[in-house]
Image (cartoon, rainbow, N blue to C red; front, top):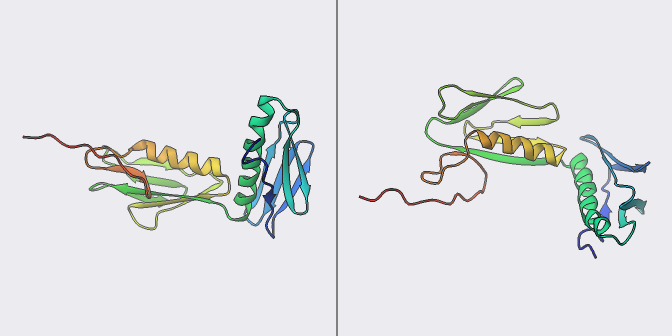
Length: 178
């Protein structure tokens, strides 16, 4: 029994969900997203303004995909209605970021600035030179962009310098002793 899959996905006001030919589509104020179901493993139905996901059989793969499919549909609905957001923080002397047109310019202590092209379906803002706000309607894309930016200079364990998620705890190491 899936603990996640048994709960229906609530569809909020302003969002329309359609299920046709094994494709779940959600349309809201931020745009439209779709997800392809595994027809031999799970089944989704729209009942009373809620999306109900159920396994097709009793196989292990069907039960595994039950919760996963429900979570993916919930992310579609939340993405087109509210969107997703990740916040990054740049820590270090001389480290700064700036948005220039369709590029994010990162000064991270290298001999040159790192230029990161901003994807079309993601909005990146730099309200301060040490903060980055990434937002969009697709949870996977927002998380992937945040991970790619963080990978340029991940936080190091001695001084904590680098690009980190807001609220992330950096495990600190003790430095050299005399």
